[in-house]
Image 1 (cartoon, helix red, strand yellow):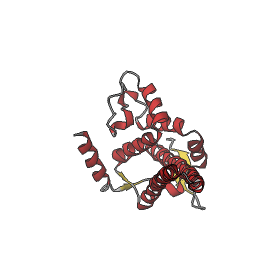
Image 2 (image 1 turned 90 degrees about the vertical axis):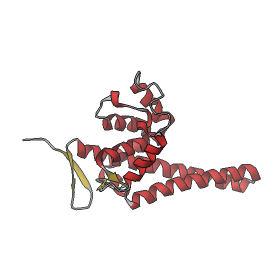
Image 3 (image 1 turned 60 degrees about the vertical axis):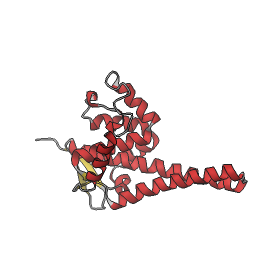
Image 4 (image 1 turned 60 degrees about the horizontal axis):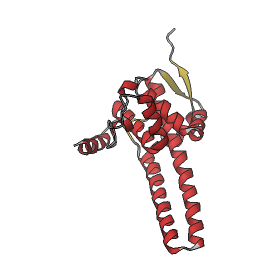
Length: 198
């Protein structure tokens, strides 16, 4: 039942009309400091972004935002802060994706073709690295084992970079939601100013 609902949500996302305020390729240009923070302190940023996506109301928290089979079965209602902390450290990829889905569903945001290509490349690279590791283990070749380690390192680098860009994309979206305005500058970058009434 829950799987069918998640499948329907995924299909519905394909028809969303709104776009992210910045695509993955431009996130580092739009908010370089936050992108760097997301790279070096990814679980902490994921924790803060999910809490912010829930409007700081942790009574609304569900593990993996309700998108995984474990959701609602982890005792979230008793200690949501601890459960979220556990989620971002033990299931980091799922925590980033769940926050993404949460924002997409709230604002009817579709993922652009470019973003899909970047995410797809990241996933494929991880799969190829896994396959190389298995082949290296079976064959026992030192050369294949070295190639496997290099490929795994590259896959990890791409994964960390893409997750940092995704989290920056989420932050920019919530800045817009919370009244901070992103204005384009003449050099194509963006700057943020608070939308304060006079």
